[in-house]
Structure formats: structure tokens, C-alpha cells
Amino acid sequence: MSFKSMSAVQALAHRARVMDLYRNSLRTCLSWAVDREVFFAEAEKIRTRFDENKNISDFAVALDKVKKGEAELAGYAHPDMYTIPTNPGGSKYQRNIPPPPELAH
Image (tube, rainbow, N blue to C red; front, side, top):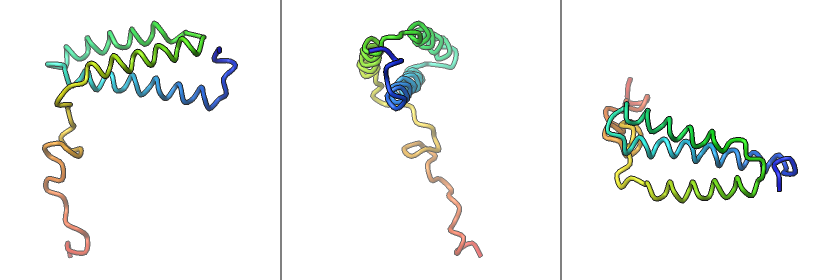
């Protein structure tokens, strides 16, 4: 099955899945990177791998590549993922939150 014979919904769903895989790959790489220079080098390698496969016209092959990529990403999962400090689970989450407006006056 080629991408041209797919419906627009299927094509958008596949595109979203690939973008999620790319973003999650970068987030996982950030968790393992020692510093930004290491992260930038690894991010470039990840981008190259995605660019090598962006012109695949057969949907079955593309779907297989995505499934293999998701399985590979699961193998690289960090046991203590990086969390942005102000996000839930971060070290600064809800620190010094402003009081409710009704108590401020």
C-alpha cells in the first residue's frame, strides 16, 4: 500500500506517530547526555536517521520502520528520565505558588 492510496486521516496519523517518535527520541537522548555538546552530536545522528527514511513511499515499509524505531527507543529508556524542574515531578514544581486571588486582598 502506498501513501497515495491512503486516506488523509491515515496519513496524518502516521505523520503524528513519526513526529512523536522523533520527539521522544530526543527527550530520551537528553536524559542520557552528559552535557549539551554530547546531546547535540547525538541529536544530529537521530535527525540523520530520520532524514534517511523520509522518502519511503511504501506505507508497509514505513510502518515497519516506525515499529522498529519505537522498539529500539523502548530499549534506551532511562530509569530516571530528565524532568524539567517546573513541571510535575520536577524539583521546583509548585514551589512558591501565588496565593489564590480571594486571599490576596
